[in-house]
Image (cartoon, rainbow, N blue to C red; front, side, top):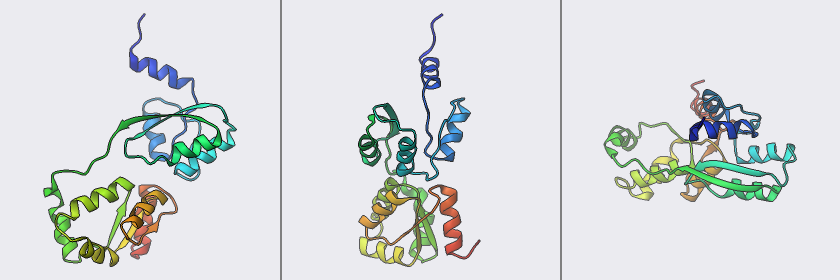
Length: 190
């Protein structure tokens, strides 16, 4: 009996150790009946590195499915630990082109009616500036952002915000829920 490529992939995954970077990834994998063996305490590349260190996986081959917009940090970290890394780019990230959906946000933003913004990835920071700089000079944009609570989901997003000179705070729990909790506390909504 010939098996489909999808079933072939499932069989291959069933015979590997699967690590999810965080709870949403774990949930998505489990919905596809993929058993997750490990999830780091810190939902980040550093957390994934800590898991591999605890597993003493030196010399093992690791496939890292990811975005084409990802930084080389995870690959470099895992190679330093002594792993052979194959990056598998599954998708790319680009700014949403139809900025009509941004009209209400731009209006509220220009009226200083936005109290905070959560950035969930470095690519979302770049997309934000790409879109907003069509209507605002960088200096005005930064002036508005300076008056807001700006939350970065994690350290890589925070670093990208710093490249744009945006002050920010980093969620302790690097998830959307952790970021929402942080901004709610910062805005005294909790």
